[in-house]
Amino acid sequence: MMVVVARLRAAPIVGWQAGCAVLLGVLLARLPWSGDPLDAVRYMIFAQPLAVIGIAAVLIVWAYWLGVWRRRRTYVRHDGRTLYRGGAASWPLAAIRDVTIVRGELGMTSLRLVVDDDSEVTRELVKLYLLADRPEVVRDAVMFAVARAGGVQVMGAVH
Image (cartoon, rainbow, N blue to C red; front, top):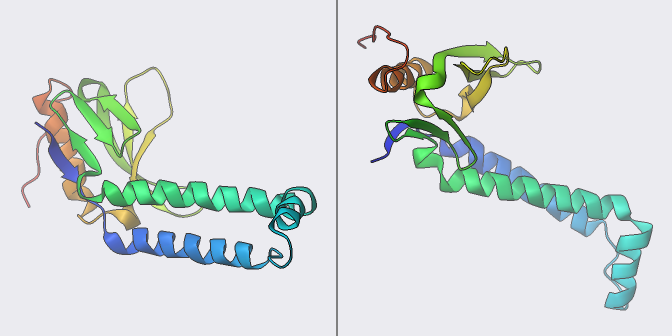
C-alpha cells in the first residue's frame, strides 16, 4: 500500500507547461513554412539546426512537466520500505538520516534528503514552491516513515 507524503500545487506546474507552449510557439513561428514542405524541412535541418535543437529541448522539458502533472497528487510517497519521488527516484527508508531545507545556488529552497550512502551530497526531494503542504509537515511525514521502517528514531512534532 502506497502512502502519500507530499502533493504538488497545480499552479506552478501549469505555469511551466504554459511557458513551454509559448516558447515552442515562438520557435515554430520563426521557421519558414512557405513553399515546398521538403524545402522547409531541409532549411530547418541544415540552415537552422539550433532552432531544431531548441524545439527538441522544449519538447523534452514539456514532457517532464507533463509527467510531474500526472504524478502531482502522489509525488512523494512510500510503501513502508522505499521512499519514491515522482517516477524516477527512490531511496530505501532505512538509509535516510534526515530531511533538510536548503537554499540552492539560484536562491530556490528545496527539501533535501540526507542519505547514508557514504556520500556528502544531499538528494533533492522537492522544491518548496511546488509543495501543496507545508515543508515541516512533509519533513515530519518522511521522518515518521523512516522511524517506522527501522531507520533513525526521531521525535514527531504535533501541529
